[in-house]
Length: 196
Image (cartoon, rainbow, N blue to C red; front, side, top):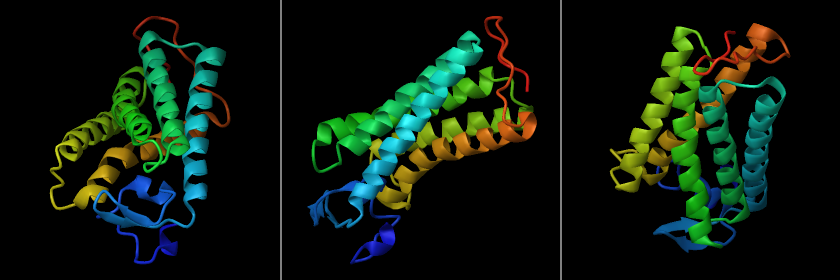
């Protein structure tokens, strides 16, 4: 999608949401023109629906500890935030778009930390979860205070957003490798997650 831009889309200067902006004009001090904005917004909505459906199915079908339930609820709420981002592009209803992004950035990254603690993951994946969620939340503080640390607005936003998507992919691959196509067993004892 970014390849269609003229002048070129900048990973440092342009935000992720610029790809879903429906107009060709100056926006937030940046020149924005995304010919495939419909595709980008549809991908936001698809990702959000997938996050919500996956979290709900795991909870409903396999039960969960309280910690895992809280983490999966956070992922469900984060998915709703992603849907809002796609349904309300940044130039349409900025308040709704910003709310959706804020929910995703805060609740989703906090969910990574909670799930890292409660899913009974091996130590390296627990550490990866803690670091991913913590890095993203620290980066969020930098992003909202306009402290981009040389990465630019778009670059810092990616440090906030990408760890969540990467974590979902990594944990899914681990899950598939460890259990084939089946889900992990989930402990019914409060405070104890599944042991994969």
